[in-house]
Length: 611
Image (tube, rainbow, N blue to C red; front, side, top):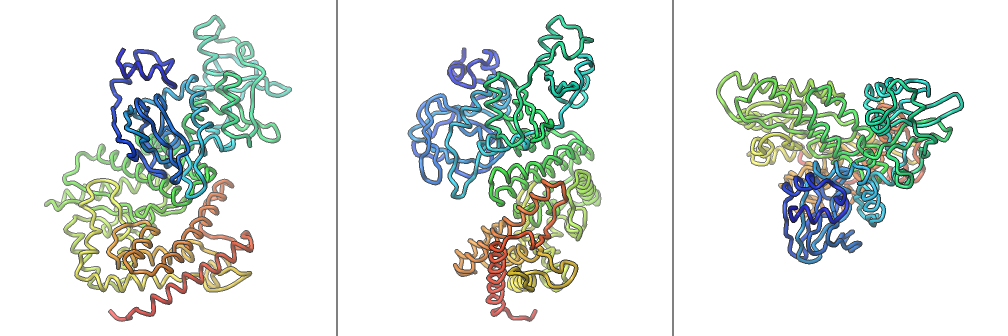
């Protein structure tokens, strides 16, 4: 046996893996060496797409500078983040010179999904220490074991009577893609029939397929309550050597059945698996089905105590994957592109700050190539992707800043000419809004060199652009009226309602964009822009602190509001009823609005109002 395969065979979760499979796995293993003290991955880093097994040496798991665990020979690390699709919960650092084996997710997930992989998963996730509260970036230990069982259910239960035939029960399972059916009689739940029962007792056994399910079902059944945790479900599976656990409501109603594989990757909720489903989709309909899981993913991440910034990053990753796959499908349909092109995420998606209500702003640029067919091809791709976004239920920007609009899609040469023309006559309101959105541009497909964003920084009209960006930042005012210690809109259609986006976040986003442009900082996330502006002197330390704290407050409140709406089955929005907020929150908001307005007033004092 191959040396690597022999080593893996001696350690969980590889102990009972077939030798032939291990040999194949060993052929795909990458061998890595890290000198002592080397940081392998940082805390809060993007979700891992691979795991590592220590071959020689040791690994420190570090929580905000404090070593909380030491991993030795044969131990795996990186899998909680890989399985959940969440940022890494710890920093992994070589305790001493380290030799380890790197394995791809596609090779590891099937092994952990086996019944024998569940005990390893339980031990590694439940016994390992969790990250502390400061800047917490929790891992799968929060995503799955700490979640209520009701949040881990993938689909509605399939329920049948004990008299139906095994053939019919199997067909019902096939029809909905389930691996079990629950059997209920006149006096309540009697048992469960699983795909394993069918394979062992019917296919490989002697029970006729026309026999009633009551002859093969397992009874009595082991259940858990809706509010019990994922950890309780794991333990129920381990204690009873089962892979299917029905979940009951407080009134003993069956909500669904959790399967072992659901706990391995928290499949319907895990961003990692959601992104994989998008990547593997063959049609727009399959993309729609995959994208439909995003709201439940957002709810699950919120329950896992991720901060809004991290949840927005996950939404952004999913959106990038969705657009990338749509472009691939469009290219497959229309043939190879006649010129290299880039697709740009704009606005909140460009800043990696989207929430469930965010519109999808987009742009497109391609290399200067003669021929009308090039422009026609690019516009056809843009129209196809924009149409696809509508099919999957994502909102396209209603103001027309999309790659399907010629205003936001052209060759790179035309982009340069357009931007110079915009900046020489910036008083057009549409141009100002488009310019601000383009300053948030991030390339999600194609070469970064094709992004026209750099032209704004290189333009001879940059001083005028700065003045107009400041005017735009000052135009977005915090709400002005007061009611019960909270600042509200006092007129218009939002009278008496707090619009947390336009009244709270937008003024800060616009100020951050202006300040970063003044500082020459090309970062796009709002908080990063504010800190970069502070470091360059474009804002003073007090202004940066005020705006960052206010931004976090508004972002927290906005996401909490939208998650609550998603849980209630209501379409999310940005309109918050002040009567639902406690007095302390209202006081914080009042103070935050006043402080943001004070920053605007101070910056307005140095503005010359001419063109």
